[in-house]
Length: 180
Image (cartoon, rainbow, N blue to C red; front, side, top):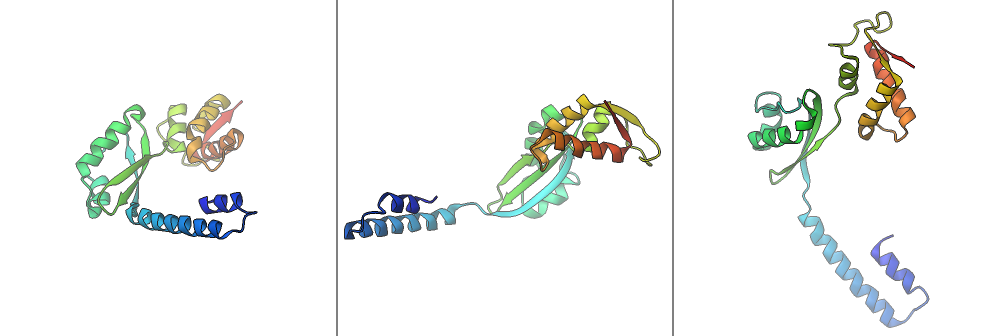
């Protein structure tokens, strides 16, 4: 409910001229403030999505060619990214960089891909080439639940059981068997 609706609700039984003048003045102030707030809000110029090795970002491809056209300081970005991903060393980390018109940017880190987490849990180099025929590893339900909990912010569900089903589907497509 907006500010004006709240004020109207407080005075709904009063129909005096003073009330109407008060509402007009407050409404003008609100519109004036909204207009100037819209001018000073940073509007995104571009959103760049990358998948980078944690703590190993360098100005070389893919970082440099993706961010250079937008005028960002690439070495500054790499230092900031490497500092943010210290605790996720060894993983590929998806990152979303929102670039604003004044060449500032905002970094949003996501969780590593489910396939990366499954490979680490199963201790395998890569998934199966024929997942329906050849199983390359086995993981337990407890490991599956741990991966689902870690990946939960990036999934489109808030239920742990449904998140486990999503991760289990990824495991099946990799040739990783889930045992009870």
